[in-house]
Length: 168
Image (cartoon, rainbow, N blue to C red; front, side, top):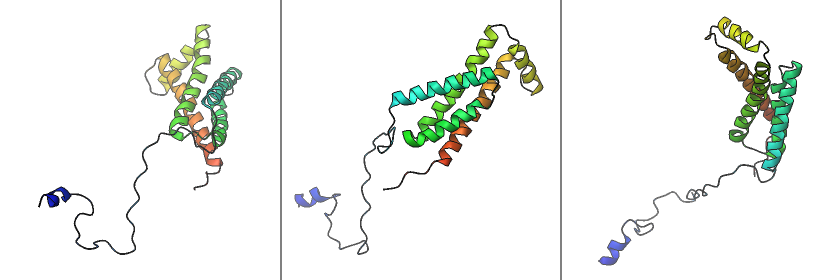
């Protein structure tokens, strides 16, 4: 009698026949969670990615100095194309690209304001005309947000233009 109590609730202890249909296998056990930051078939070291993001910042800063407002989009597109080689998942690459664009546009805006150029006044007028609070910080934040959107859209387009990895 005690052996029966030990079997209660254990798999295969009740011999009631085959309750499942013949020929259908049991679902496979889930593999344990393993965090991954890169695909094993295409790996670019983290140091190389950080160097490329720094280079992207320098390109965005120099593009802003030249008046090339589209530079965050172009750099985001190149990073999206390069991600096919590096293999970072989007949940890591998108915030990195957004941070790259934000830093790349914030540096020239703050440098110009530091030197006394009238960017603050222009940003205040643009913010007021757009219906936002008439502060220079709001106008500059909107400018940085537009740069971030350009870079993320460029990254998305670069990822869309690259082939998908083969499923094994």
